[in-house]
Length: 203
Image (cartoon, rainbow, N blue to C red; front, side, top):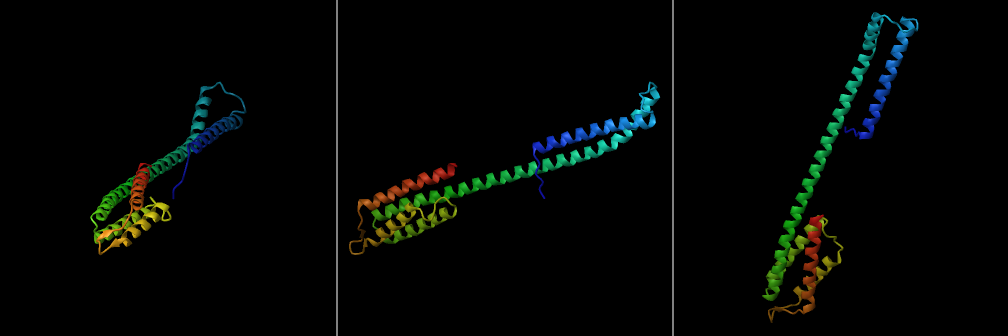
């Protein structure tokens, strides 16, 4: 079980220890003077020596116990610090790994998107449909990685445009019957895609 302590807790513990030890010391001296020296301050060095031995005998166990408490407390703080450091390191590594995956998928998307445009120019319907399928896979992966929202209007529009272009293919003429509007929409999506992905990687 992880116990969380702060610098405020450490400061409070230090104050408690100082207070307890101070009170113990004062009470020890008062009790000694009252019971063993009739409440008077002695001028005999032997009495002072006895007082020192008495104080040591009373306070040393108390100080030893508090030293043990402090050691345990410090060990807990060190363990929590190492645990937090490890967790932060894991988060950073996972974040970097996710960004690397996003980068690789995005790179593949851009390559396949360029191929998609080439298939339109080359009037290759079969290859065009293959590229649409691959691009859809890239987009799905990026949605799962939360780069894009599935309800994103650009994503929905891309799907519609790709379907329209695919349906416009004329087998007799062996070409796609499209206009500049659809090409412009594809170009707009490409620009949006690059901007969104790189903003996500830079975060």
